[in-house]
Length: 400
Image 1 (tube, rainbow, N blue to C red):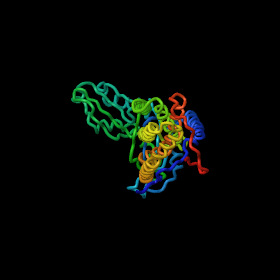
Image 2: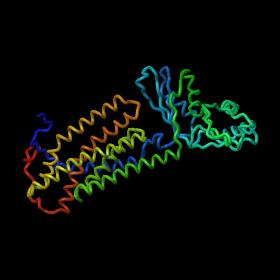
Image 3: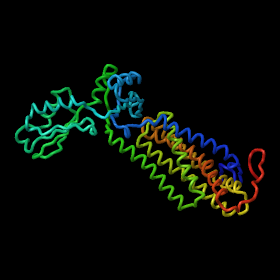
Image 4: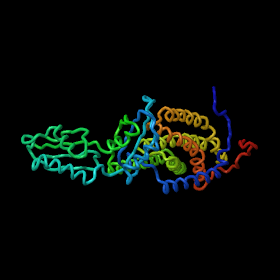
């Protein structure tokens, strides 16, 4: 049978644990500082605003698009990044993000309200604009207004177009006795597209999304809670599955892996979205799975090796699971690399990146964070049954 790691291999992992523990601690503290100082690049899901995917029929430099965006929206945060659609390789795509709390100002809303009052007089009950809804204005009329005035969608659109705005669609929200309409306007996306026509007359907004600031904050809070709840449930599972000596190492591993991964994503400027949260939750599950496999073998080995030095018992357990760890990590890495390669420009690439970083860190932490923590707790607070001296080492570092 083919073996990645030959049976009987004896690498001295725990002998090098003090050095790697110091490195892990330093990297973890540095990661916390990076997150605290630099922060993370919150995507539209969490920050709120508009996300517009632009398509150009000819090559357009990203700096031209970025400069135009800054001219149009100088007071809000904006971002531009390249985007790829395999189905249209001859086109140029840019994903633009505009963070803002309101699509329309008070003067624009007042202008719309004045146009409707001029047209419908006392039949107009109210005009409302909710910043959370994006490019949507709601118009409500008094009861039974339908029988007295023309409330067709075409007429409503013509009233709006007497101002500087243009209508995308009109939706009927009410009943005949209480007419109410949602008028979706051509907002930020239309303004941006018109400003870019001198670069390419065929430019178009092929996708427009909007997330209100309150919704974004709620999604952000829910995402953080999802990760924390996952960690809490895993803590309960570990406490029931193992004993006190195992649980702290597993939980420290999870925080170690998640924090360092987030810090690395922050350094490279990767956008945080709901897909990022999904990737982190998957990473947490993968990391604890690898740790539990090693812990299971440690528990079995400790029970069968009475009188042996604890460091030798732990080295044996880690070595016996090393082949399985390498095979699992490698096969998962191949899948993640495929996601990054073939999913460029989509959330799949972001997910693959998170998992790639996390798998490497998670495999490392299972050996050099979780196992040394168990060793420390067992020696500090456990029974003193492991009294033998550690086995001697070969010059290459293997134990005998």
